[in-house]
Length: 368
Image (cartoon, helix red, strand yellow):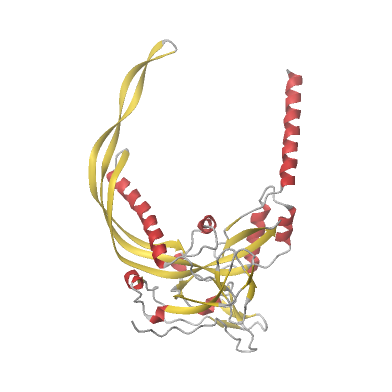
């Protein structure tokens, strides 16, 4: 097998036309804005502008037969604590990990991967994301005072594009099972020394078989290990119809994480998600009051995929040697995160609870 030429390393830098400083993508205006002189420039149309995002063939990717134009190489730093792979400029060799606040000191490596096909641009500014996080933290009971101080100080948040896979597929599923119909029998039982008639539910089962078909569109799979899935799942839903064809201008001023979940691993998880939906379809098709499923044989075909980047604002807070992370959906402002507990506040609450309970007990005893 002959070696194919590799895609050149790309730096996502866009110098200002007026002063030469770097542009940054502004979520409010949707344009590139220079922080130095304030000059703005529209995001230039890409080659797919005005057309839907084209899917890539999964079988071709499995056979490593994707066009070279769909591959790219980027420089990344790998965090030794959470294993995040985050893009950085070539001259940077030391940085704090935006996912867990661990100081990262390592040689810059090169990561070759499938090029992003779509990007969901940030719609919330850092200030708006911080306000959403403050409101969320303000609702936490028994949080240490230091956590509230952290929110009030307005510590800087990191804007990260998190990698995802999306999968499309046509499916046809043959199934075998049973349809249950509930009926009632009347029985006589003894209650409190008296004969009483009660209705007892029974189920009559009959064989059932058939076929269901479904087209799956944009089954979303997280392609990162850096954030707990319970966080990213809680950030959903994402407005995927607003995906833009990938253009590096959207990444100006932000970081992009390289995917750590491989395409086959992502496909396996997508199949599991599809299987749960197909099972619901089968139960609906069987009908009746109850359903039993003995077997489902699914034929999946025409599988396509996209590598997409979704926007997340991140903040990492260290408390007593532990790192707590907060994430904000860069489109909707939905917040999720970890939180420390204040032992002192919990102890005070317990003492106050005991005092109140004792006072209530004393009043009740006096009244009796």
